[in-house]
Image (cartoon, rainbow, N blue to C red; front, side):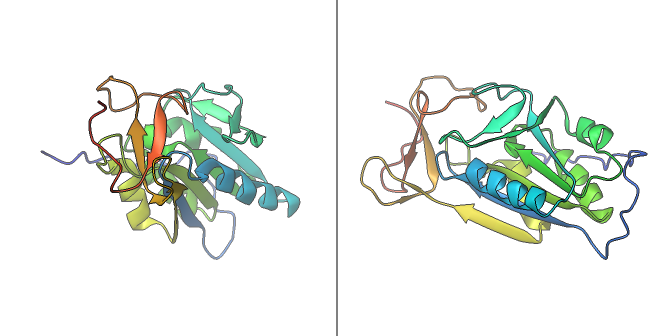
Length: 201
């Protein structure tokens, strides 16, 4: 199977260097219910407390809790801009933006990796959160590529609902074979290696 190669997008006029020594990329990944969005929100709130200019993006596909906020499963929330493509992120970053948050990064097209690198190259801090594996336990290519180029990677673990062991997989509870099927506790459970099955029975 041929790998999908994304071409680096042209820099937006907004992406003028901030004059910082360097930007960087942080990735928060893991299974469903591992606290990825919660950790993303925590880091973004700290940046706001420090009076940094923050903008947050989410995929327009994610409408579970609302369109204009990212909301964790425990109802923490922060305003966001829903976008349909990675390229749109570059178009919506303001010249004075210092910190860029991206939730559900695995929903985005492959160009999101180059977008994150362009943002970091321009002196900005980028924090991206998303699943590292799909419902079959296979890596999401976008997340894997982003982890490879990131300066900081945090892998969260959930708790297996079947046995209580550390869980790093998302067990799908419905019969759909679509790789992307947006849902929460109605469609998924956190499972450990032993309790996870690739096909729902």
